[in-house]
Amino acid sequence: MDGKDYSPDELNQVVSYFEMRNYADPHHSIPEIKGVYHPLYTPYDDSMFQIIDGLVAVPQGVLSDIIQRCENGELEVDLAQLEGFKRLLGKMD
Image (cartoon, rainbow, N blue to C red; front, side, top):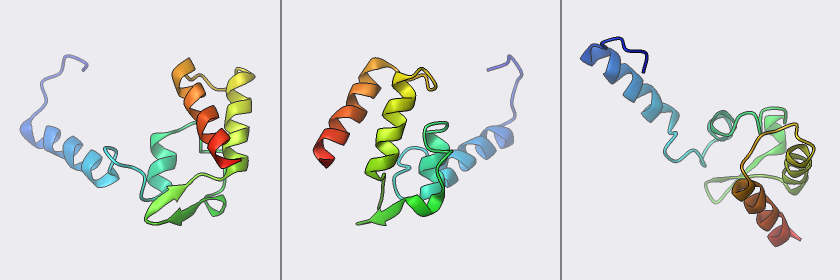
């Protein structure tokens, strides 16, 4: 933190905000998943995503594009995350 003493009300507001945004489990709404995984998903229109069985489905084309952007150095992700994206894409084929 920034060294400032925060009041209990301020801390409760922060906790409430994160609970409302559902950052612990963002996979149920498109705005939440795009907010959590920014900047990976923000360039893509919400209409490209679907909710299937209550979870947000990332389209194969979006995942392919994200992998390409990571490999081109446009996005910074760790190697494990990039490999995870590639495994997911492989399962889609």
